[in-house]
Length: 205
Image: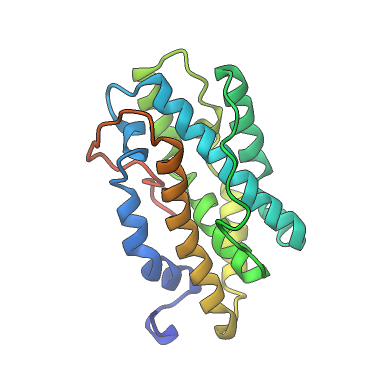
């Protein structure tokens, strides 16, 4: 883990420390399908289903700890459920012990990952529309609100050095656990492995 003196902000330090695992998701064998030119309908259903279960679990942890209501994932969860209803699909539940978030800094680390994943959503929505023009795309199109991201960045700067390890560890575990969750949900779906980045590929402010 990096030394605080190397960076001008907590956000930049966190981006540096989580960079390798974040980059690995750009080439994830399942998530990469979102940016492919021939995205199968079933693959899209599986990805949204896995996302809905994962985002819902993190939001439940946030609510349980009463942490950062201004950073709620409820808009994303609702958008995912709306898309899934159109596709007649259900969320893929995340195991109760798959991602344990037991502190406010840990919840903030997970929110950093999932709110940040909204960057690039509109670009992916356009790509999905080329492959599946009738597919619902509200989750991708909504992305992350600028005000929400700025509020999250402000909260990051309030994290103490004592809490930074908890924050960073949770962010890393969120990246890893989401990748595994999507892979497990897609275990029986034949997929290609495109090289086009797919997860949170837009520029973060």
